[in-house]
Length: 328
Image (tube, rainbow, N blue to C red; front, side, top):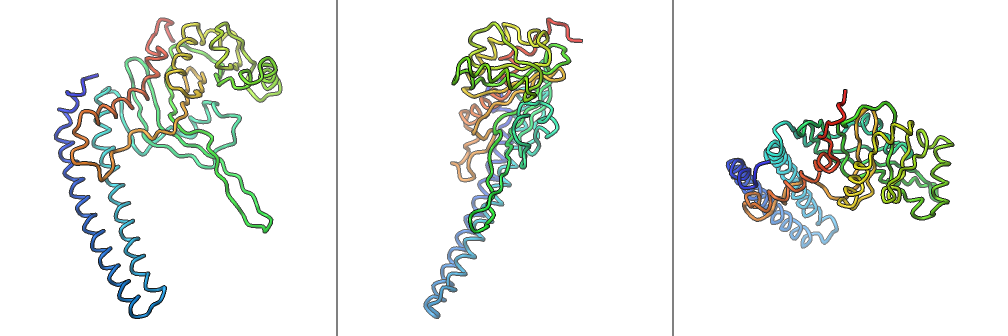
């Protein structure tokens, strides 16, 4: 990947144009906000003096609505302009074989295929953005932000309906070509039961596989740190060990420590699926009201490149470009 200085020099005309556009947009909004506040305030004051009624506040309320709508429109235009004109170019700077789609995401079918949340309720709300897809060296990759939720409905003592929304997953969802062929399903989940309950937790894990709550069987592996952090289920014990080599287990442990998150992985149809929970919203522009030429600063571009590097780091961290096994 090229240096920040080189990328900044290449993007300078785009950054200059988009900053001028942002300045003009802020000026237009300021004029709308000023005149809406003045007119709404004067009308409210006049009506209050003339009628002393609560209805006198209506012009001020309308003015506030106009200001809110004007801001929302311009903030959305700024966000779309930043993503299509700046982020798309930054993604290509990382690799010309990658493409960025700001309003797309990993599909529901891919999410279901991963089996990473097969024991969770089906999502009633499925949203995502910032799809990046293409190839990094030898590895095909697709990733996006995802937020999946399920809904419960309850009724209070007076029969009033209440909806409650609960997050299933929020974070980065990554799909990558794996460097080995395999036919079965292998799941790698955080091992919360054994960490909390010891041997009894391990017994519960085995029981969940036996009663059909997990595909296949519980797999015991020889890496003690990996075993402490993760539990593994697979439809094929031999294939699970073929996939989870000592080197890969060590890399997964290191990657989990770096992300500081309860990551989940699955190996399905010769692909790796990875879910990294995070509440950080990636690839978002600076505020509409940020200081002039914020985007032109090298530290701003460095922040976005760091976010891209983190999202794409799974390829290097898990050594997915290695092809010594001669995948068919």
